[in-house]
Image (cartoon, rainbow, N blue to C red; front, side, top):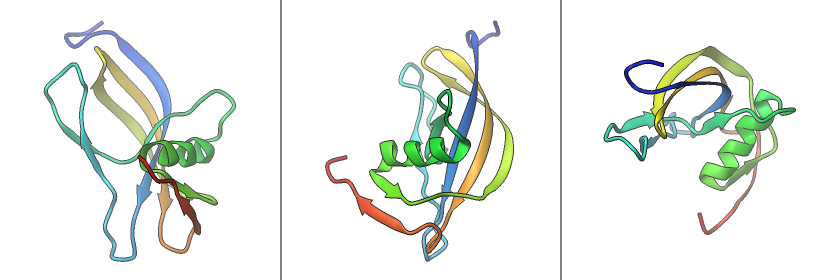
Amino acid sequence: MNNFGPVQERHAARVLAVNVSGRLLLFKGGDPTGSSRLWFTPGGEVAPGETDAEAARRELMEETGLLVDGIGPVVARGRVVFPMSGVVAFDQTQVLLLRPGHPRRRRLVRGR
């Protein structure tokens, strides 16, 4: 326990999605129970049995509607700590690169 709440340790994968102009996809959001706003890349917790690349691909689809054929390579590893739903998330994070032409975009799912 700390001043912010209990700690939840997770294994996470995030995506550095860079377009042809070199722009990086970022979301602005935060903990719904708090007031801080953060910029962050698509990604989240790696489910049991998933690889980092599978989790990054799934999270990208869930958060953006973008379905890609593949993803990678891992370009960074580290620890990320942030408030989330009344706990402190302590993520062991793998960051995977997604750039134009690798991998090929398959389709965009509408309605997100």
